[in-house]
Image (tube, rainbow, N blue to C red):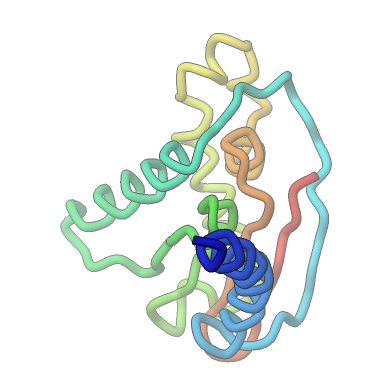
Length: 158
């Protein structure tokens, strides 16, 4: 019976260490090494509690919308981390994220649906809210953008 508590402690320690190692293993697996970073610190309004399920649901919804469109998706979005707190967006062709500037343009385009959400409309933030604001409100701690070939940009939300 004593083996069970020791196993539980060892498993928890491994899970914590494993989470950090897993984040590091994404480099070279999902995207090339990080070439630039930025910090997004703006807080528009007090944010509601967001859960892992909310973040996964959001990524699933974006993916479903892409797959229902008449053309093939040009980038893929997925959530990683124990609490799905890291969002990763990787280009699927050589043009869509040919530069960080084009990737930021896609993020700006994704701001339009974010502004139409009930949260931003009710808080009267629809005219200023961005996709980054939405990610932060949902509890994502980072956004990793990559062309999948040459560059990777990490945005940290604080």
